[in-house]
Structures are given as C-alpha cells and as structure tokens.
Length: 55
Image (cartoon, rainbow, N blue to C red; front, side, top):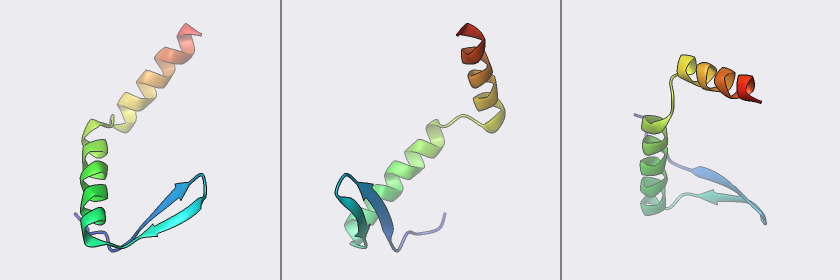
C-alpha cells in the first residue's frame, strides 16, 4: 500500500487539495474499504451483463 501525500476532491465548488495527515488517513481508510467491497473485473462484467439482459 502506498501512503497518500495529497488527495484531490472534486466538490460542487471546485477542486479541493487535502494534505493534512489526519484527513489523508481517513481517505486511505475509505479507499481501502471501497477496494475490499469492489467486484473483480469478471464479476463486474457479469453483473453488468445481467442487468443489461433484464432491461
């Protein structure tokens, strides 16, 4: 795992650059959880194909 030194957030008011250590740790935790929850490429393909067939 690579440590973040900055994160760019796109908000309704434009881009925001985050470089505070505490906030970066929070974003790393969020990204790690998203990665754990994400399907593998084959699983994503199968899900999309199933949804497309049901339309």
